[in-house]
Amino acid sequence: MSLVLPGLLQQFDKVVSLPSVSSANLDLDMSNKAVIDYLANAFEDMGFSCEVIPCDLDRKKFNLIATLGSGPGGLVLAGHTDTVPFDQELWTVDPFHLTEKDDKVYGLGITDMKGFFPIVMEAIKPIIGQEFKEPLIVLATADEESSMLGAKSLAELGKPKARSALIGEPTGLQPVKAHKGIMMDSIRLLGESGHSSDPALGKNALDAMHQVMSELIEYRNDLKEKYTSELFSIPYPTLNLGAIHGGDNPNRICGHCELEFDVRLTPGMNIDTVRAEIKERVKRVTEPLGIGFEMGEVFSGVPAFFAEENSAMLKAAEELTGHSGISVLFGTEGPFLQQMGMDTIIMGPGNIDQAHQPDEYMSMEMINPSIDILTKLVSRHCL
Image 1 (cartoon, helix red, strand yellow):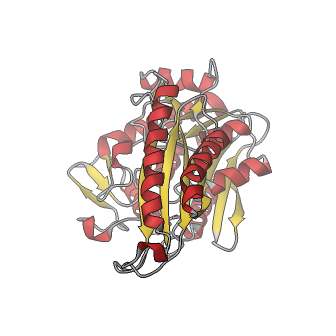
Image 2 (tube, rainbow, N blue to C red; image 1 turned 30 degrees about the vertical axis):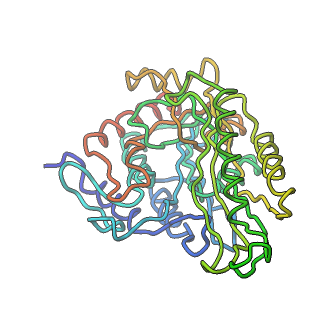
């Protein structure tokens, strides 16, 4: 028998039932407006003042700032409202309906990280009628999984303003003090097609991409030698060749080819420098071959993240959870909240190894401790 309140399970089911996939592939990309509207109504019913802020009207992407109380200082509880794309055929349960079984709750985004918002609602219920000396702000963003457009647009606006922030990404309720940076780029090679019986009739972009990939693998090895940080379980930068598309027929010389890749950056690495170095290496391959190339940003990037030195948020989270701050390999919106002057950490229910997977789930045993910790954290900062 689950000890989780039925009302909370209903809230889980509601947020999971509202599709909000974000993707660089526009055929898969969706609006997050339905999720934002639902959260705005729910928080308004709890007494929050809600502001819905568009960040891309053409693609119908929105952020939400829900505020309870007023004045300087304050605590932000932040999360993103989008999910990654999914493979329907690999799911054994309905990704858009909450399924409870084996002491787990299943659904797309339940862990990463739409399920965080109902947990926040439950956590503040015991203190909702008390006087807030500093405001509590719930921040719900768009497109974290594809471009971090939501967090970027808020940083450009310079709001919300607060003293501290917690991003509820799935960390197993362990406070995160550092994570790697990430950037995602594409390289498109432009050759000349022709009849495959005579290689001289064209310029093969796929052959050239083979050399570019070899150059990137060599660059990856150079990065591993040049940069290291013992903060991380994988202490060096990684470069992943993620997707490749090119040509149109076996009997034609390949006239175009595109590669997409990511780089996970360790501290001390600059995103613009990495891009410039990669561009120089691609040029080194393509110029002698007479192949044109274009580089594009799939995701412009977020730098490595560090909690503030002597962070009060980190200390409070360590005391409440009994866990020391950890470092993780995945990226978050943390640097954008820091940019707005907030003492920021990452900590939330669920585990990252469930994110982006078929049959994504959250263990039931993690839910009530999450509620308890968030209630205590809000009480410390706002009451």
